[in-house]
Image (cartoon, rainbow, N blue to C red; front, side, top):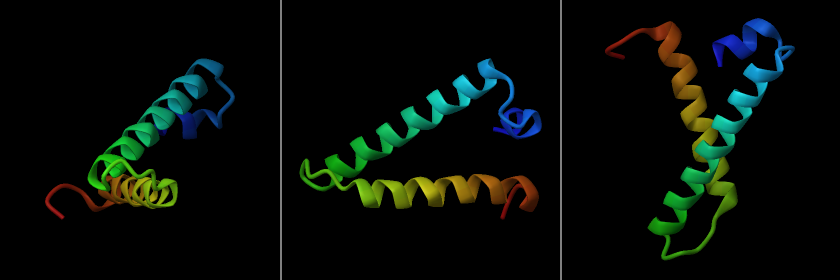
Length: 67
């Protein structure tokens, strides 16, 4: 993600890798949400969890370990 930000999305290989990773992460979260909800898909909840995860990841960078 950092490389993507630093290149401004102008490097196709980096952009492709980041977007592929993000899509797979979202798919995995959707799968977990469905498993935990008796097979019911809940895309809005999956999106909220993804945003929470992304925010926590970003915060960990500047907050440091152990917080």
